[in-house]
Image 1 (cartoon, rainbow, N blue to C red):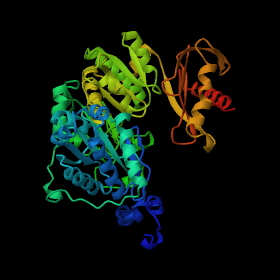
Image 2: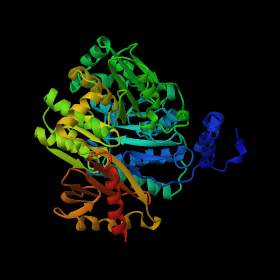
Image 3: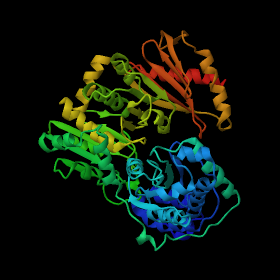
Image 4: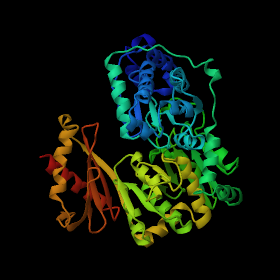
Length: 547
């Protein structure tokens, strides 16, 4: 292990730790020292799913105190528009209804949570401590208790050196920009004053904080909402010749499936031990990360096989049945068909604009309207609220997030898991067999994504402006050549970047990154071989626009 006196900052220490996590995990004590002693201010930006930062660098105890005080300041501000967005009448109502606080399995999660709880209690706000819990549990817990909001300290699927601060208002969904921009404004003003705030210990000490069992509330929530038949799921696992493999990547989803469906010898759990460093791997539900799951499935001769991997805060999920991996681009479309055709749930299909049009093909033939939104799960809120005039049968995005009718307004990997099991129970088919039957009926779709780097000077508005000419150059009816064949622009969608849909159902979407000097390409071809020519067209169109 490297000497502890060689590090001037947390970033260099993390670099050594992550280079060999088994050899250098002892250096986490140095990261804790940086996190407690570093009082340097840092810009606070809430992205699509909260504020995130590197532990000890910008995500420090002092900065978490500042963000918490900014939140309290927002509550006290008397800004009626923001308070309405939260779902409360005033600060006194927030104090009475209370706030649920918890974290995923990240390093120092409990310690950061106690800092937050101490400051909330000093402001007279009732608090519950959830401990280690998943994002959908917070969302369901708010609704089941009537709490005013929740604070979940998680950076979702980010690497081990990151932590995060996710705020959910009274409807349980991700905070909208009305709320997050106000928190940013107050926090960054405080950061500009270089404040150093003293720690505040929860009243009576950490052991006296009122606890809450969010998973038990989530279980009641699932039964009450009734979109997924939990008894059918349990019966299928108990009676059928099946094998289920659940990889929790050392995250907060560990133990969740067992409590939801019961103890069973037919379920294999992977990576359930404590490990703040995730074994040196990125804790995301990626194709590469499914290796352990697929090894388990290949060793089984069970009739039904299901493998899933969920990220540390339980808001993303990826599937396999031993025959093929099934990304959300496909599973979301399968879920629409299943819920609409087998469970007779009416409504619309909600998807982010970069998601496969496979669901569009199914929806069109079944008479289901499709609503395409900007990237970010918070954009599904208008379709997931129970009061919505257009309610989503399913809401999903290509980056492995899903929810559905009567379920949480947050991405919910636990819901996604239960839905997959019920899908097999009802259809009598493996996931890949069900998928292939749908493709035979509705057509084959092959989505993918890529991108190119651009000059750093273009980041932000300059890049947006350069790329905006694409929508002018490719209006509906435009004929262009791709792969030696002429294609006509059937539709042009500009809710997030520019999506050009062609007459054969293939499409490309060109979208600037908001934070990096990159242009992202999302494409879909009608054959596996056709992806290359669509990518080439996306790059050609982008470079023409940049020139």
